[in-house]
Length: 506
Image (cartoon, rainbow, N blue to C red; front, side, top):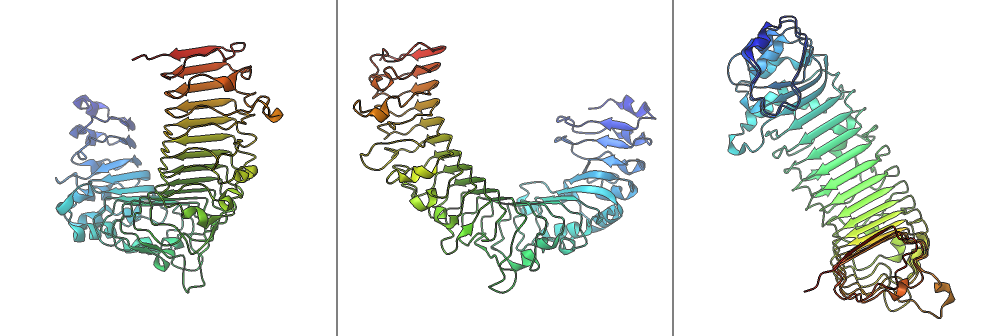
């Protein structure tokens, strides 16, 4: 609580209370500070309402947050007396607006200086939502067309306001529509000419996204980032703006996120030529099997909780540098056709793929992975070997770092790991190490560059014959709880700088 004596600071022009999380109330005397122009109360999550008579501060230029109250003097209509507001305005607890006229009186339309606007209702209101009233309130909170950033959160109405369909909002660059579970359709957001970032989250009643979303044949002329999250009823993403041959081209889009859309079975738009980053999480039915998506500019691809068939639909990944795969259903190995395009891939991370048995079917797939620097495989219980069958295993020629963790079926390492300088093996109880033929001159030193070796809970390892005379560059060696190890005499100590041994005997 601020002291009442603050009311004596009659010439105070700026009061910054940002981040005062325990501040629950502003003193009433603050409304006597008629010279104040800057009141920053961002990140004050406990603040319950504005002091009575906040509208008396007619010289306010910056009021970062307005918490709606029920009493006269703290209601939303107090904003009508603050005509000079600029910059950011965050209005919270809008469920306390009992009369639509209060939203009209707030007169946001005349506040030309407000460029960032957030309109929030409280979460988890359930049956306390007055959906009809909320719709009228939001419709009445139409901002000035100078608006650049807009967030609407926890709105309970069934439709978004008509003013969001208005192309006159030509300056909007960022729009977030979050946790509006009853909204059944989207406005024509594609016709906002300056929109660069669009985030849609928790719109559980939306079933289809199509022509009404685009609003015309050349939508989203500036859009670079597009995110869909937790759209539980969304089934179809129609890529057509008009007729069946008029597929939209999201030619500016660089980052696309589709997260937690369990019913989505439709196709991704095919014209994503400039997309650089693609994230698809928890969309098990999105396989895009009927159309190929050509992604020649894609640098980063993240797939989690999807069907393996989605890999077959993403083509021309010739610019991809980072591939991260988590829990890809039914993935046993990577098809040659998919791997053959990854000529610039630098990082490959695989985790939680229960059916994965090996990476490559015949080993030729790795010939195109000449840029691969890092390989991480985690929690793949059926992963047995890098290549199917008993043939010799050779890592991609420039691989520098490899981490293997919790791969309970993995039995052997590749016999050729020439450029590897970091190797971590954890909880691989069947692993016995690489098999190196002493009669093969090409295997003279498969670990010639290794500097760091970490081994943890690999109980089948007894000794390290593969390391005998081959680890002259080793600087760090750590072995932890490997119950079967009997000897470390093969480990070279010539260059060793750090040695850690943890032995557990039961």
